[in-house]
Length: 304
Image (tube, rainbow, N blue to C red; front, side, top):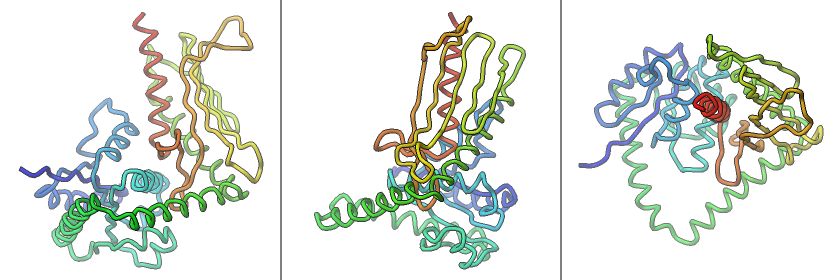
């Protein structure tokens, strides 16, 4: 029996009704991930969305005025684009209540992808997506026999995208974009920390420009910072995350228990974050990794 493709539906909350209709149609031939079905009480929202992004074979993106006007969904799309570049997963757009000019203004790259039209109805959209998925699956099989010339062409496209990202990192606008995006990461991280407070687990959170510090009662602290080296160059900038043991009395060299380091990058004009040369993370993935690291250290210490 053939394996059913795994499909994620990315949509804005205002478009939930259509997303449900489309899911019901897609369920007939693929396994569909949609947040309202797959999130359970106690789940990490960031963690589950990151899991959905990473495990899906295809991402159906319902592009509407609400979608492109939402910070949350556009950042989710950045994660999808980042994964598409590194894993060759496919984004399948659906246009709803929006025209080409609106899509071009939002993302010229997304506008160039052949899209299904929602005004034809969920059943017709699902059929179009099915044909696209079947065609893409055949293309994957053919790609296994890629010629040397095609591999060189793919390398050329990769090098072009890399050069464009590096050039943007060397502009004041690019540096500012990474700063703004990091501030959004801190916003979501702070909200998640405050939302997890209980009698047993409490955080003292201090937010400053370019950094966040959170202390727990058991002397475990979290420090997240991002400071580009130069005003017009972020090529050497780093997003640093450290979990350390708070000492009493304070000492200059605190024991670092766990750490993460990311470098800013751009995919389709949106900020993403690189770990090493091959891992590319969206904002949500970064936040989830930070929370997971803090959770693991607190849990380890509480079990002693």
